[in-house]
Image (cartoon, rainbow, N blue to C red; front, side):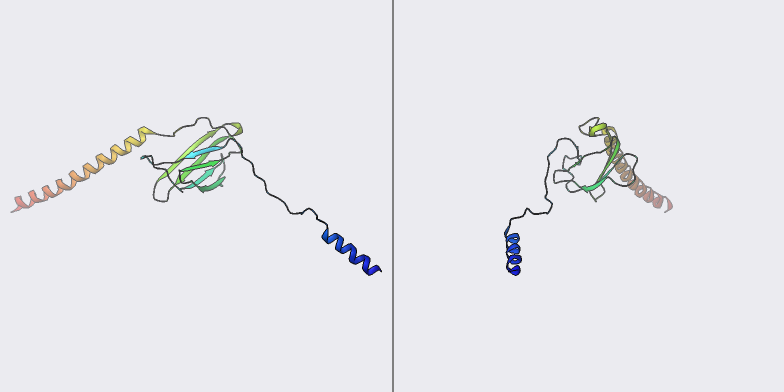
Length: 152
């Protein structure tokens, strides 16, 4: 008799629909955060470039990741101060920016981070250097030919 009572209790407990004790998952969509968009001077996005975010006064990166196909990367700063963002595409192009973040994760200013004077100066310097090298090579060739003529 006791055997049948134990079996009945086990069957009832086994058949009873207990709520699972596993943990669940939930998500949340929130406004805020900082979006960094990296692109080349041609306007083409730096797709899938490596991004390293460093918090103010820290040496260990706060976040490491990659931009999306549109060159964007989003993060949510947890403290105020100057955040450092470095975006590298692995082919020599590098964008390094310091973002001043106010309390509650607000960026002091938004928009393109450009340094047009530096960018145009470097283009002009490269052009001048290229022309100078060409003139220098031709000057050496003409000078060498003139030296040979004078020697003969």
